[in-house]
Length: 287
Length: 177
Image (tube, rainbow over all chains, first blue to last red):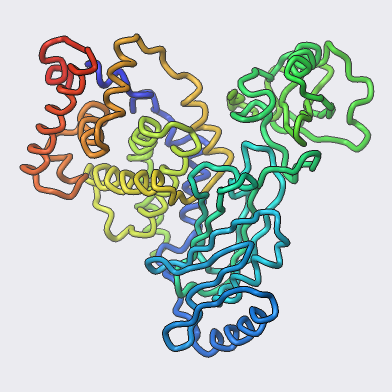
């Protein structure tokens, strides 16, 4: 093997078996669940006009800018919270203020004739800017951040949503943004991921004592959640009242979640388990 | 009919998944990006199934798609439509075992990173995907001759960049491609 090929992070031969792994199967199912030719439906002219006039009336009231050029169709929208323009066959919405009321986004989309609901919730830094969930009935939307990889909530970081012009149906999408100080995360993050309080720390199977010490060194507060592994240690359940009572330093930790800025929740059991119930047969990721 | 399409797509998917995953992992700095590139590449293949060639050609066609997806990604036009925890986890695993590089290898890596994108891609397609100029031509959608000439120029520029980076072995760049 030559020098350049040694630079490769991985060789195809080392990926043998990946095609039948859980990730590959999940992706295959997600992709083929879509109709292969679900080309964007043509807009229904009449319905759209009606919507536009309602939108225009709302715009006058709300102090936003709507640009009408060809034949009265709205081609752009601008407000303090978001801008929407048409770029190469797509509506491109740039959300500048991820802390705004969700209604404001909905109104912006409606102003250009789109039915898109956007929800932006506080998350751990590793999930900020990521799409958390989406759904809908036909509108194909895609999302990104500008600049790429930035964290919505920081100045200059826009959340971008693209919708093909002429899409029918509605869509909703839920994003993560940086939490305000003290704000609990809507969805916990993996505390060992990049940018998180226990970045790079191995958690799975270590003791509560070791990890609380590590957390203390990093200035992170810990809370506990006692979990009950399911049969064969595939998955776990949590019972009300099982939170932190009686957890001792010699208990075992299976996952660390960041639940608010500087607060990590350790999922623990009293016994050492033969495998990690959070991850099953998957090796828990670190970093 | 839809089932038939799904079955044929599945066959190609299974045949090519590891190649496309490898392509993405070798080029993306983060597992999240690599997972996105794989997901978007196959989503496009599914949508454009009629254009997807059969047999060994499918892999080359998909490399071409993946290359465009990656370029869009770098321009900040990332799509995250098929995110899944399971895929992210599988891919993150691949990044967990990053190999140790010698100092010399790191210097070569840096030089390669600093090459123009097109040069780097040509050289990578040879060194990492093991393609010959005829196959590269099909990935890039150009003639075999054009691929050969572009590859030759890319190698010359790499060779020059390596020697100005102080990596001196004579004919090194030519030899290791």
